[in-house]
Amino acid sequence: MPGGPSALDRLISRLGDVTNGMTPNGEETLLGRLAARLRQLERRIDDESAALLSRLTARDEELLRSARRLYHACSVVPCLLYYLRTSESPTKFPATISFTIRKGVPRWTHHALWLAGWACMGRVFQSAGSAATRRFAAAMFATGIWTTFIFRLGGGLLSDAAHLLGAAAYMVDHEVLLRLWAVAPPYRAAFRASLGVLLAAFWRGHLLERRHGISAESFASPAVRRRQIAAAPRTAQRSLFRADLAIMLSEN
Image (tube, rainbow, N blue to C red; front, side, top):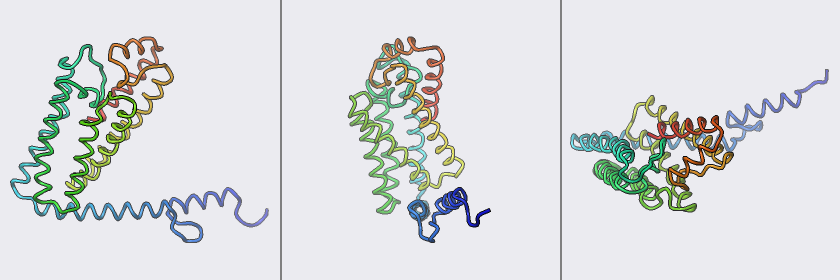
């Protein structure tokens, strides 16, 4: 047999080098540099977290508990109000948070609870946070305003694109926020898992809607969308319902 590694062996070796962050010449790959930057960022966040937590007072902790209760209410109360038909009838089920709070009583209730939660948490960042953590909190707050106040769902193609961009950024912000508040790793892992389920279900639902000519939830009323779904095959109806339900449950 001829000497030297085969093409397959060289490919496997190269892939191993890439995943280890190094080229065969011993140089750091782009993936390796990115991983190093991420580790550096994680250490910076952990350092900021330790400093932030060390400065918390009893009053700060009470404010954080109030913020948590308000955020929990923000996830539940507007949704209940929507299904009590305070903003439209018929309603859509399953539905995303963005859809249920896009107008009427659920919208303003969500905004009031969300702002109250941020008022509590923002005071803690202001009193105990560093300049860096205060900038982060301000940026996350602005992202929320962008996503749910300015570009709420249903405002048209460009508005919805801006909404989705803001929603994605706000989800990423949560990863940093959870680490700043030293939330236990199992809960952070659960957050990442729910985010993965949401993205997979969103993509699955998008493909089903395109395949069967069904409008996205922001481009048709619940009644119109219901008729479109009813015209699709039964298997597609069940698959779309499961995808929508997975989105609704995972984002909460």
